[in-house]
Each structure stands twice: as C-alpha cells, then as structure tokens.
Image (cartoon, rainbow, N blue to C red):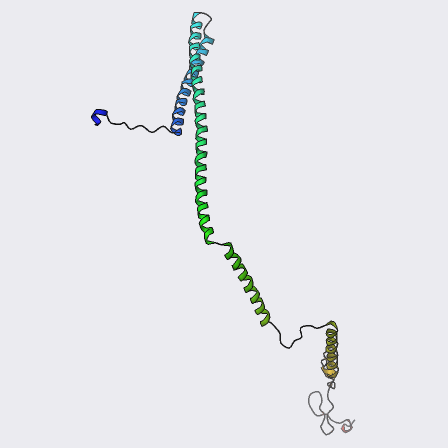
Amino acid sequence: MKKIFGAKKNKDPPPTIEDATERITKRGDTVDEKIKKLDAELARYKEQIKKTRPGPAQEAVKARAMRVLKQRRMYEGQRDMLYNQTYNLDQVAFAAEGLKDAQQTMTAMKAANKELKGMMKTVKLEDIDSMQDEMMDLMDVSNEIQETLGRSYNVPDDIDEEELMGELDALEADMDFESESVPSYLQPDQESELNLPAAPTGHAAAPPHQQQEDELGLPTVPQASIRT
C-alpha cells in the first residue's frame, strides 16, 4: 500500500517564537555588516573626490559613490524592517509568557483551593466554639480551686477602719509598757556600760604590817632611825 499511495511524510514542527527571533536577528547582523562595508567604501570615495580635480575622473568617482549610497539605503530599509519584525515577535513572546504565568498561577490557586477545602472539612466552627467554652469552664474551676486552697482559717475577712486604729493603739501601748518594765541599764537607749566602781589609779597603799619598799625593791629605812 505504501508503494501505491506513498508513505505519509512527517511534518516538521512549526518554528517557535524564539527560533523566528533568532533567525531574524542573525539576518539583521548580516545586513549591519554589509552597511559597515558600504560606509567604509563611501568614506574612501569621499577622499578620492577631495583629491581629484573636477573633470571626468571626479565624475566617475561620484557615480560609483552614488551607486554605493543607493545600496546602503536599501540595506538600511531591510534592517529597519527586520528590527520591526523582531519588535513584534518580542511583544508576542512577552504576551505568551504572560499567559503561561497566568496559567501556572491559576493551576496553583486551584490546587491550593482544593487543599483548603479538604482541610476545612476536618475543622468545624462548632467544635472550635465548644472547645473554647470548655477551656473557659476549666479556667474558672482552676481559679476556684486556687482560691479555696489559699483561704485563711479563723481570720476575719473584713476589718473596718475603727477596729484597725484600735488594734494599732493597743499594740503601741504594749510596746511602751515593755520598754518601761526593762531595767534602765538594759534599755537600748541607755549606755551599754554598767554603773560599776571606778578602777583604782596610781600605786596602791601598802598594808600597815607590810614593810615598804623603795623603787629598787629594797626595804626602806624609817627616818627616825637615821642619825644625823
């Protein structure tokens, strides 16, 4: 059958925007190179026109320069056309990239929306409110337990101002009585030294029956026994 009808040829894939842009850019670079060569040739003809005298030779140089100038303008027109095509392709590529980004964003948002819906099925607002109420009840019970454990026994809860002043006056009277009953030598506002007899000063007088001694420790001789 293939020999009769022939095999179906595989079609090449259409060129992408990047391929078209690259090809046009290469063509533009080729045209720029040709324009540079023509510019160099025109500069050479210009120097020749300045150096030659008016006449047939100068006219021939001018004719060649005119032909090169026409070629240069033609290449400039082609270059401008290629630049415009490149600009249009860049705009299309930018729009295509924007659409791809939008598609990816939509895909990501759809996946996130689906995941969020699945998570919301496991979380109910009623359960959250019930949990909050239970937590508040537990906190109230805990506070009551703490107040009960910290309660003082046999201590009046309320004390008025008159009772407070009376307690303070009684306390001050008890303190005054205790300070008066303490001996004066034990009171903190008196001197700490006891009223004891003063210590003797100088040499103590020797007993009558004991013989007196001089400064060298020898017994002294009575004045009456010394003969003059």
